[in-house]
Image (cartoon, rainbow, N blue to C red; front, side, top):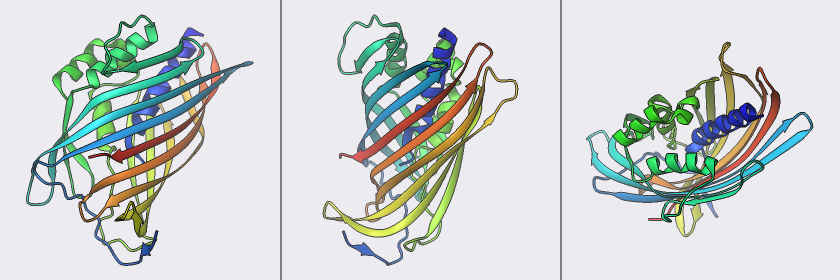
Length: 304
């Protein structure tokens, strides 16, 4: 049962990381959608994640609920002649509440210095403390593609020392892949309402390759909070290519989701996004097999 719990946490941590960022009157005019960041510009976002995970093993049903809020600062260092922005992304605060069948109710706030005795919360706190105030550098293209990702030294050191993170495949390549898929990908051509485009990302994990396909559809300019914003609908789907000799075998039986993105074409940045995603799995391990369903809602909002 202990091995089963560990596998549950592995799957939950990886899915939560992957899934970090895919989320009036209407104008029918064409619009060139581009990120237009400026040197010295600072953007502050708040990202909220609500998740319910249901695990069924034999006659037992285990339900875990998670609510997490992250404050993030984007600082634009420079912008080249092609519009590629060099920026630093820093998580400044994390709040988390978690209801678990094994460890009871857990809560964490990076701004509150309290002693931690719960073993699960101790492991999570160590990871959170590594993330908070650690700047991740990258280059963001006008289309929203992230390259040249640089992770801070203390984060890399934690990857080497934390066996739990290593067991989940959460090393340098994992976070580079996650950062690369954390933006809103825009179309190359001028967009007309009902135009669609797609983007694929893959994350390599110990049990296989997790593939996230995003189908975007431009819905035109619409009024939101007295501002004309580009509305983009999002349909995410997830699949898994299992490793034949992995620590366990995972098969995805269903994946459904939907989202809405609000992008300011004049300012050239994300204003808000919402995404829901339901994934269902069958997991076979040498000791025990179980099914798992994860319901997630992730929102991101510009606050400054």
